[in-house]
Length: 259
Ligand SMILES: Nc1ncnc2c1ncn2[C@@H]1O[C@H](COP(=O)(O)OP(=O)(O)OP(=O)(O)O)[C@@H](O)[C@H]1O
Image 1: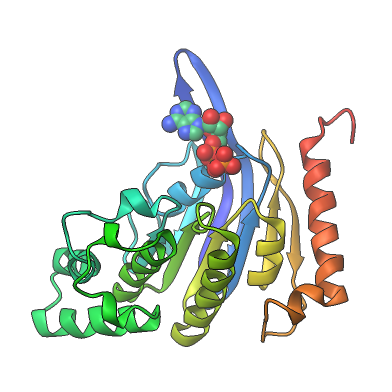
Image 2 (image 1 turned 90 degrees about the vertical axis):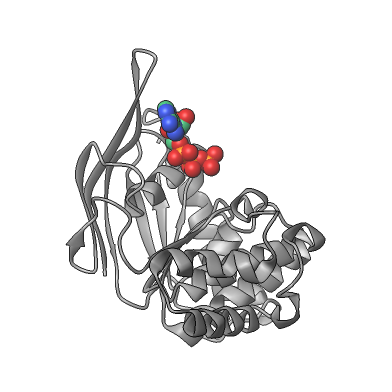
């Protein structure tokens, strides 16, 4: 479904090159839930931007559904961390969710159905006529997720979507994302700096090194498919996997001479 092959991305800035990604290779199967973790500044956002066709790679290729990414691929949606900036404050919730559908040329009656069903899927059926600024941060992020779902994406990219919400809301949103993933069979690539979150959510965790960034590990999360904030997080296997990812990231942060 997603194939990333030898991806390198260097930025040119004020006469000096910043190599954000050195050499990234991994794939995501259709319908899989893969989390990407790595130290701060290792290029997680850059990776998602290359996948979404928002940035051209310096080297290497990205393909989605067999097609090489050279611009935003069809059927791919993205949810960013900063929900406050991704929703239009002058549009009501329903209109925010509907906007990309209008741009896509979806007929009015179908737009109405999609807006209703995606707001229902995120538990916000009643918020249709509210303005985003009347909602809590967690609810605003639900609207952003509904907007992505209404688009009926085959692939959903999420860039640290819960970094700005409180711990309790975060747990609710994590469960919501697992629910919509299961319900809609979407291929998920979820970027986070939170190790526990990556193990709780993913079927696999891809671990990135610090710069020059490569994939240092690709961990299969062999926890039961039914996850629960209490039982999963206290499962000895969860604790073991979290410890493994943590130690890999610590190793990734050390300079090559210390490893
Ligand atoms: N537009 C840009 N021009 C120049 N350098 C950039 C640009 N965007 C990102 N970088 C650099 O590329 C590297 C990777 O940045 P990126 O934001 O992708 O990392 P990240 O892992 O998402 O960071 P964080 O964990 O802080 O969210 C950083 O060194 C950053 O300074």
